[in-house]
Image (cartoon, rainbow, N blue to C red; front, top):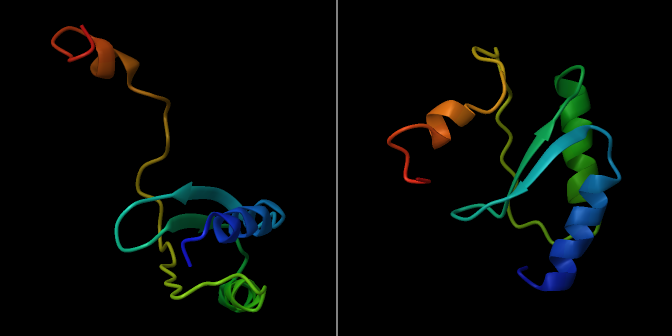
Length: 89
């Protein structure tokens, strides 16, 4: 569902679950991108089952487990974003 009340209910549910450490509302084939931190696959399955049983209209749920982090966030590259030759000048 794309009703504003449904989006608010989804946002509230996700905000109340500590396992969801990031939530992005996105455009395209999906409405949200969530990052969840869990200890193992059974816990991920439990978390997704709880989301689907929460009474929030969810048409499709796709999970993509992370195997390995290959680059860590090291801060925003402000020099490259706003330095010489950038469109911000």
